[in-house]
Image (cartoon, rainbow, N blue to C red):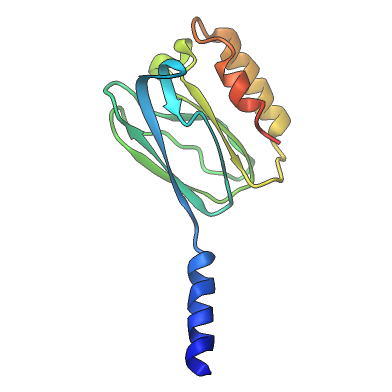
Length: 144
């Protein structure tokens, strides 16, 4: 009986562990040029995300984050792993390709205290984009 209880507890502890996700920084995919894949991602608090520069000349920089969350920025051509502890909306960009709308959105949890502020950042980034217009707004529309 003790072995069954121990096995059940171990199973629960593995289920409670945080998940890990990858976001690729790409020159192109089916959505067009200069893109994060996926461009929208929903995760839970405590999950980790690794941004991977699959092609050269990309890096990631946070533009909107929930209050109390850590800003993030990678080096060019380097991967960056972050742990997302604060619920809310994270909007990020590749500064080199921002005018090509190389931006993305991560939703952490369902409590979104900064959604309004993130939406303003999305509108500003869309306004400054020269190509791939509407892509970031499409990602943001998935935030619920």
